[in-house]
Length: 202
Image (cartoon, rainbow, N blue to C red; front, top):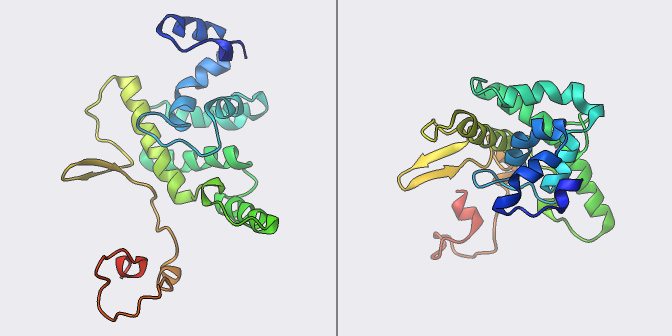
């Protein structure tokens, strides 16, 4: 793409915009927010240009156009954003023919088969993390579209000292599996440093 060769200095923003195709302009805001910005997490191993290219693929236009319209409508209910966001993540990690859970499992098996150990950050995201990510992305888009930073943020948890991102809408693992977490600590009392995962998870 021509605009990839342009610098992102203040004087070249208009040039970058002019160099974009119409589909790229149409998808630019959602692509930028979804792939990671100041208020949304970066998707590991998936760069902005890779995601923008995917989102503007004409073969996927019929599938993606309704999703774009959903995210760009500030009135869309959160549950719809979560559902559509999961579909976007599926496309980013391999397509709609498999769920994120299936894609995650296949990627895990592939890493095991290579015998180099598992690199968790390279696995597709879980559906719970995809829902939370989509809500934060939607909150960012609403602020940009409505030019209002005082909206109630979705995908964030308000605590005493400010907002913290919600990393997932579901547990990191089934409770049955978490109960199996243990360490080699011999003490029957609480770990004095409280660093052991088994104590943290009760």
